[in-house]
Image (cartoon, rainbow, N blue to C red):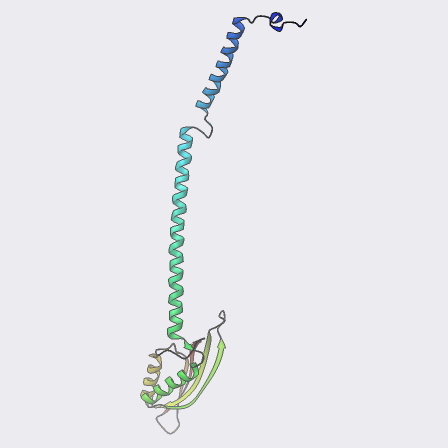
Amino acid sequence: MPKNSSATAKPRDPKTVFRAILGTLLAANLVGAGLILFPPGGSAEALARQMASLQAEVAAKNAAIAQTRVHAQSIEEGRAEGDKFVHDYFLPLRTADRVIETELQSAAAQAKVKSKDISFAHEPIEGSDTLQMVSVTATFEGLYLDVVKFVHSIDQSPHLLIIDSLSAVPQQGSNALSVNLKIDAFVRPGDIEEQ
């Protein structure tokens, strides 16, 4: 015959049951109090400080982004101005020698200076794969005032013609000067010059 398990079990003492319930409630209250005093993620003040710090960091990052945009825009404007300068003042490679010679001959004719000799030497510009410098060596002959007009005319050229050196020697037996010029000009790759 099977034994009845309820008959052999001791009746529970109500005090023990009550103490167990009170212990459980006390433990739950302690856990609740711990969560209130030390919430996960920090206290309200700590969270407010952390949020203020993060907001300041976001504002600093936004300011840095705005500054970077300003720098990028300045770089683009500088690049566009540099490209415009090269296009406006550097001569196209294919026609540079002819344009320089024509301009020098025209200035000499207007100033009543005689052209004797013009030679060209092309050199690459360090740091550039496409730009070159043209060194022009030229000899002219004329009266002092005419030479001054001629040099002024070269200085007023719409192209970037730089007089690197100028030497004038009086011609024996006349009022004329023999003028040796070294002029630097710059060329860019490109087609026939746009007028």
